[in-house]
Image (cartoon, rainbow, N blue to C red; front, side, top):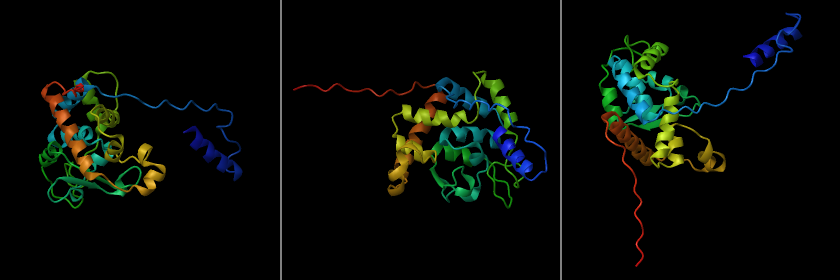
Amino acid sequence: MLASLSTMFTWLTKRRIVKRNPCSGISRPDVPRARDRVLNAAEMAKFWEAASAERTEVAVVPKLLLLTGARLNEVAGMRRSELSDDGTTWNLPGSRTKNRRPLTVPLPPMARDLIASVKSIAGAAGFVFTTNGRTPIAGWSMVKSRLDAAMQIAPWRLHDVRRSFVTGMADLGIRPDVIELCVNHTSGLRSGVAGIYNKSQLIPERKAALERWAAHIGRLISGEPAKKVVKLRTVQK
């Protein structure tokens, strides 16, 4: 905000609309540290349970955040035209993503069932999560407050669910490049020369990864113990 205001007042000063830049001499605030909050297994189970207490068209949105790793505005603004005819794929256009890159999300069965549970309301805009058919559901800060009251955990933000998705998939042993494609990132393994020449979207790998993650979430919310990968010792002959 300081940088934006200073730029504006500098422009106004040069044009003699104001006499001086009031931001001059103000110390620039420190850059906030990157957040590293990740919901653990128990917290994700509480998150799912708390979301279940909401009305259906509201409850499905936070659950899809956890299952897909998508951003809140992407999920909340989902349109039925973005879903494939068989409901197995969500095709998010670049006009609705942060980096302006389209995203194809192979929906695991759990996600498809959740979307199918939302009653369709006739409307030209075709929003999935709506009460009037014209605009998507809003007021997510109030929903977050209700989730907080039900969960009773350390402070967190809705965007932390996306970080929890990425971290959780990595803990399951899913390849980093597959995870990056699932969340529509172009950094890391998909940047530079690799990003220029490797245009593969790895749809089968992403489908398998999302289904594996959904199965993991299913075990968490059902109270089943997480499956462990056991390495077998090689026997010398």
